[in-house]
Image 1 (tube, rainbow, N blue to C red):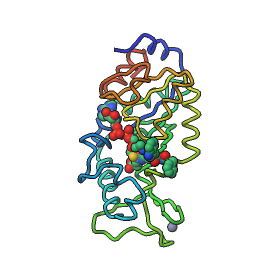
Image 2: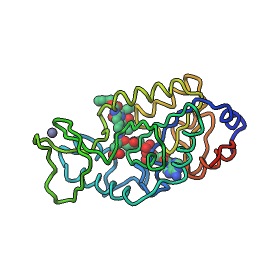
Image 3: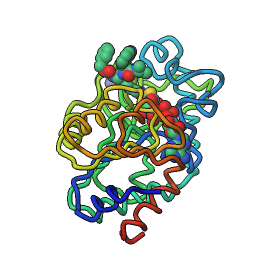
Length: 244
Ligand code: BJW
Ligand code: ZN
């Protein structure tokens, strides 16, 4: 199932950079964004995850985020998250970049996480940027407001918005420098995060994709491991002799 090249590389303590997406959390019960699973009340992510959607229908967008927080509150990390936390401990240069906003990597014990699309548990004022830790919103509730009068929104990155600059720069640096890059559970279509595996490959890294289906990245990858990340990652570590 795994190439000898990959197993031999893993035994040499390579510099590793991992990019995760919604598929990594799917086995925990978090819906992905795209595909049949990704539709909430007939809306696609592209219709809800924008400033325009929030400004024209804040109730709807806040209710979507509340729905997702409610799911996350009741689930656990899966073996894929735990395997990645284990990798961080086993390799001397390991960087986990996640597009996920669900905290599951942290809950699984990963320490050094670059959250390039923010975190759904955090909120902020649209006007003064003041952080607001937790928001519980029910449809029909009055809209939450900051003391400055600004609207409160989830502290995540919507389409058309810049990613947190320092976080993304660090992710880019790690992709640039790594020997081995894993793109896991992501459709790899949302930029600039989707550029990270391409950067790594162009800089000479060995590129491995783990996904239940092929993606636009598959033709560029050196190795595509088809299957659920919660099954493949623990098997990979076991095959490479990394204690799981
Ligand atoms: C499994 C599995 C299992 C299932 N095991 N695998 C035209 C061309 C190029 C770019 C653009 C363009 N038009 C606009 C853009 C830019 C835009 C973009 O990339 N759009 C594309 C859709 C075309 N990007 C942006 O706007 C970004 N900002 C930006 O570019 O700033 C510069 C700028 C400024 C001003 C003006 C213009 C540009 C920001 C992007 C922000 C994305 N935000 C979201 C929401 C975050 C908050 C939230 O969670 O609500 O991020 S959208 C959503 O997509 C979310 C995700 O992080 C992101 C990626 O999705 P992901 O994780 O890949 O999930 P899925 O569902 O797509 O895929 C899941 C995968 O898992 C699938 O492949 C399954 O097969 C697999 N899977 N089960 C393994 N068990
Ligand atoms: Zn404010």
